Image: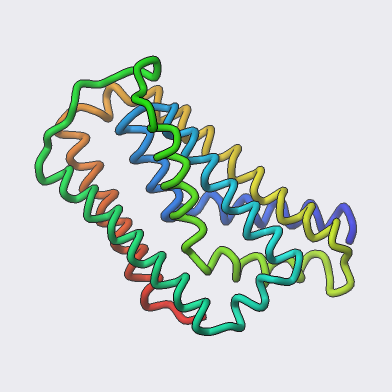
Length: 209
């Protein structure tokens, strides 16, 4: 491992993080629905899952999961079901168009933080392609003889980069929340988010390990 390989990995990871996916959709919807408090907790949930999967891959357990076809398929279909559930919820919100008045972070209902964290964590942990990403990408940058510490440094760096990006996203969405939370705009956003989540679920269902 060298500093140049670490820098190359950071650039590569940043590019991948910027590509919208299920985590982006979940954090976006939670921020617009309830504010930055729940959006931030959703981002923390995604990051916690990234850290868990990165550590799992670094410890060698990830390879066992990927090679165990029944377990891998179970995780994959759980992810498909969860994304479909979130997508249907968003589409139903768009169809009904019944939104509560815009509320600030100071009146965030109890349990919103846990709900946001859970949704962010589950959207990421039930996507086995994230674990496959760590297993496929890390060796390209650290080499086959890298220490556990080096593997952990790379994996956790990706998690931290993801958190930084998602927190910036939450801040930007929160600033524009008054405009984006207008009923007509919100219905369009919920509809697009629902379709996107259903699309991600379909792509995951059709994917092959």
